[in-house]
Image (cartoon, rainbow, N blue to C red; front, side, top):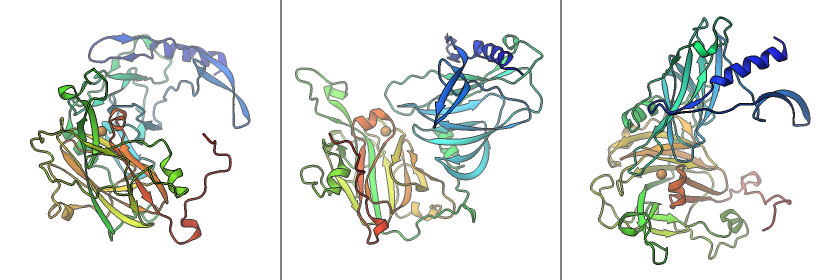
Length: 416
Ligand SMILES: [Cu+2]
């Protein structure tokens, strides 16, 4: 096919590529300007099909092929269900680590998570198009955009005009379908093969128990009321510490040995007060705050249980850890029971990733080896919760060997 006829073909495709609200019926049309442009990347200039000046350009699938879809949830505040009508997806990877492949019609992906899926196209061109649709999984009490976004999977075909093809829509789970979320996360297992072993820490040096959830802080707007309950400000915390970002970088102050007044190395290992975390919330919803880090010796093997709270509503929190992958060894609903629940931990082939949804009204247990010296944030990947303080930092000290030490900043690091 010559470049011109190829371009015509792309034009036809993109006339029908719409982002549509599947349920509400409101359809937004976009204009796509498809043309060949010279693009230079890594010293090479190539003539590439661009869409509105961007590339990669459009892709049309062929029948009887297997395609790899690399998915990332780049939404700021929405966990998302994703499905392609009349097609089954085979999930092969989570957060860039192989998993035991499994088939599903729908997947769930939290902000910042990535996943690779195989899409086997139908053996023959089906004379139909298929929506690839995503919409939120939401458990909190706050408002959110509940619209469905979609692209169209179109098969290469010469028999019919694209305009006349029927379009199939996938059926996505209800917006608050926690049982789908639970069942989906239970299908994820590390490949745990000889070539790709699951190096789950077996002997644990330190155990921590963190509550994660919402709360309130005093309103700091003079003569105005804030948006939170009783005119207070919405806040969020881990172990009742709502994290305040310092003006000097944590890593810089640690490396230079000048942490006085920047952070405190006394992050609580567990909540100071026990309460029925997932029962009736306490009357006092005010949280504490500070810039506290949890200090770990090099190579500490850590087990961390993160417990959602029902303060201002139970909610799924996708917690993201910088600097490490971790293994998700257990999860459940209600309050974590330290006597009973560890007995069912999976230490053989738990999924390894860097972001995990703490179940709404439940808990999740992770393990990781602190073998990466430095200061590493761990935070909710719902941007609004992070901005309310749902974050903390681990400080991993240097080891004894030269390759176990935090390297100095690069010589060209810009000075503020
Ligand atoms: Cu959150």
